[in-house]
Image 1 (cartoon, one colour):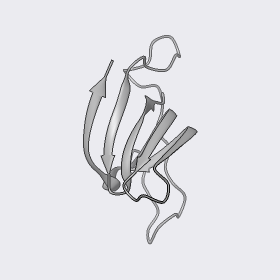
Image 2 (image 1 turned 90 degrees about the vertical axis):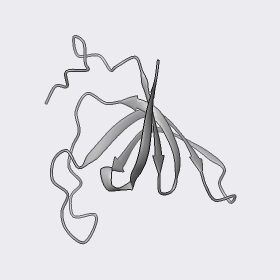
Image 3 (image 1 turned 180 degrees about the vertical axis):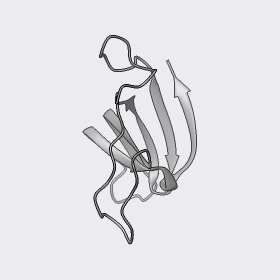
Image 4 (image 1 turned 180 degrees about the horizontal axis):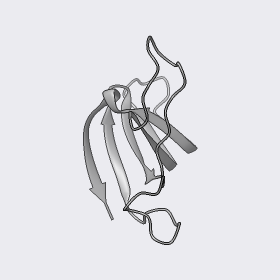
Length: 86
């Protein structure tokens, strides 16, 4: 599924900053979103997660202040707010 945000198959050039229940997540949105397979009490439907690339996560807890990931999936229900950065 191609997003309107993609251009000729490339990832968007902007970053999403997601304020989640577990920390602040900063990453580039992926071209498509995929469902989670039975990760919780009920299966997620397509579109209930956002896929981010080149991710930095600043945890709210002090035991792991920052982390980096090539790819991260975040459930929409965990997102409390968001910002867009060029």
